[in-house]
Image (cartoon, rainbow, N blue to C red; front, side):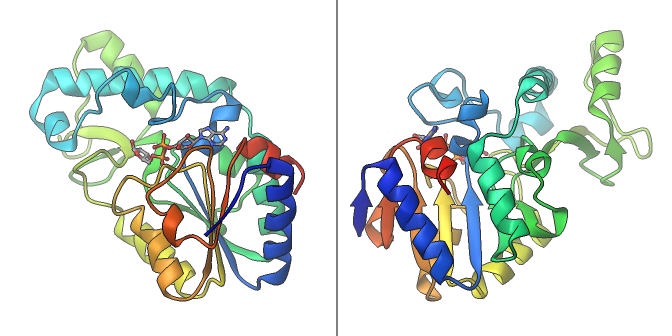
Length: 251
Ligand code: APR
């Protein structure tokens, strides 16, 4: 494992590795959006250092947990509303447009990769997307704004207008099943990759963190770009430390 501490040096190395690769997959976590003003989860001021996550079974079992989950979603919607894609989002979108990046697998739910220009056929959201809501029973789509208005009116969490099932933000909570189609698309992209770049993830959450391992074990070069150590640094070919924005602004 080669650790590069200087972001400029890291940027040059990453550019060389991408130049030499044929099929690149990017894997992103919350660290790629902090420089857009959206807090991450486990970094120094991460969300989970302040509040506890709401697990899927709590959401299903408790009206209070559902109302708290919705409160957090509306707060997040406001944060995302004022956020702009940053240098890393823009660089990754440019690399996708250049044709060498076959997929951007993201754990993020903020929609900033789409807004930076990554087309949906190249974007794989394995933890869903916080800009949408859906029924847990029949998957009927629900608009966040309508849900927010209904809760303001009734004080109750919404149920599906089609089947009466529970409605939830279309994001994967702890304890919730992963989206099958997204995971299959991710595995397909990994099978063919010769370079896998993890950016801004602490690589502590499964099964997401098994994807960089799968890439490495099928023969791809593994690069981890992150401000702090991760459990997979030991199997990475290169670890690039420092600000993600700095590493990508020179790409
Ligand atoms: N430059 C470099 N590294 C950064 C920067 C930055 N500007 N900002 C944050 N980081 C690093 C943090 O140090 C941290 O190690 O990014 C990492 C983000 O890790 P997490 O907060 O754990 O985010 P992530 O890995 O995406 O979490 C995975 O956990 O809570 C669930 O569903 C949630 O998708 C999320 C999943």
